[in-house]
Image 1 (cartoon, rainbow, N blue to C red):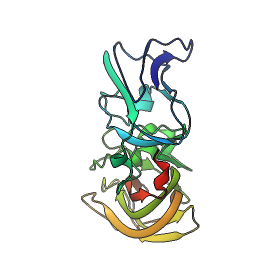
Image 2 (image 1 turned 60 degrees about the vertical axis):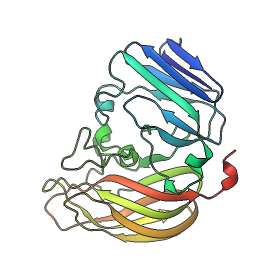
Image 3 (image 1 turned 180 degrees about the vertical axis):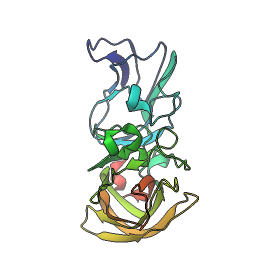
Image 4 (image 1 turned 135 degrees about the vertical axis):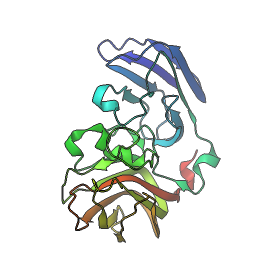
Length: 269
């Protein structure tokens, strides 16, 4: 495995490190616009633990390609992140193969602290048919980054999935492999009176199954929890969202947590 940092205009590595089971790249220097974190020599269809910055939480992810290219975000593209992320003149990036106890257990299958906007072959990955004005603070990825802060909206720590008032808004979560789902937690944004809220939504699964969720206003932003049993799911969507009869046109999703296990225990090698 290898980690390298280069700028996309010349592709000449400025910093690099490699290893067999675990790699940590630390360096003194500031990121520049156009810099890319390049992780290569991965084994496809394996689980890894990625920590792309000291501020970001480590994430257990499933990788389907032998490399990933992660453009370091700048300006508006970083407003949904802690301002210290990728900031300063000393950095650490680390990756390692995931251990069996981290993968083959009942866990949150949906969390990914660094999920980029584009599908780069690293899962879980969130996307949507609409994100308010295309702004990072309203991107679908915000709903799986693990942050459940509430009380406002916009820049970190109040990022969310925003729907730009679209009646047909739909959120999608891809797992990259089959999983068994037993519980889903929904955190609706609760910046009242600015916000509205959804009273109903529909989960649709790759298997063809559907489940209607009855939602309610939560002043404290706490999770609304739903028990279910859906096996061999590779993706799900949350759509057919019905907002409350409230003057505000702005419902939004702060976080979705999907709990369960791997469907194929042979997938861990």
